[in-house]
Image (cartoon, rainbow, N blue to C red):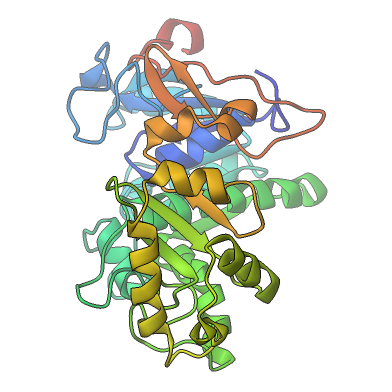
Length: 366
């Protein structure tokens, strides 16, 4: 592997969702990530056993090696400890206390490997009244306040598919935390525990809304604000062919260009920043965009400073000229998936390899 994290060894205790996404990000950047899977599943395709397991052709498990172990077996625990002795970091996503009961808690592992970064991924965190409760993405983003911000005024909150909580507030935050701790350990020679709670990370993602609220520019209502589809110049609109486009003409000069491109001369549209006028102006602009198919609006607006983009499916996004030019997506074994991000000028990561079968690398690693 190549990439900015080349030379680092990460041990991932098998889990679902945010933990694998964190491990995928680190592996994408060149880290040698070894996933510990359940021995009872050895040899299986990851498409079996879990509704979030992904199989040989999966995305979240790409680019790493797998060994199968039984964490209730003293012999296998010793094998795991030997691997961890030479590791830079671990990733685990069990409920608080489980790793300690297995003899693999932070105190035990840091005593053996003082430089180890111990990454812990949970929904609620390692402590607090809900720490031992089960939950999933929608619960975590609900408690953090993020879910209340997403949706239309006439309906209830709408949960994005595990992106805001599990991946953004969870796995990505843990990956960031692990890299921060590894940088500090390089200077101090001492590892530490990284407690990544999805509720904490998702709360952090609401920072821009907290900023707007502090400025008096956000109301606790959906579709009533500048950036939530409340304004007529920052929203999605359906075209005559049923497809959708997006507009984000926030700045006055971009808004003026949008009006020019749409041949709008109605003086009412000069009330851009007046929330009282937004509902009326939105009804008018809805009719404009419904009058033509999406291709018309792409020809007219795409690539201009009117701040426009079509709303694409993943398959459509992969074939868009801009994404194709940047290789934003790639296919492996017939599976469409996003390329590693961000980009680096010198330590360029390789294209990730496929997900391993469970226990595929037992002989190689054990």
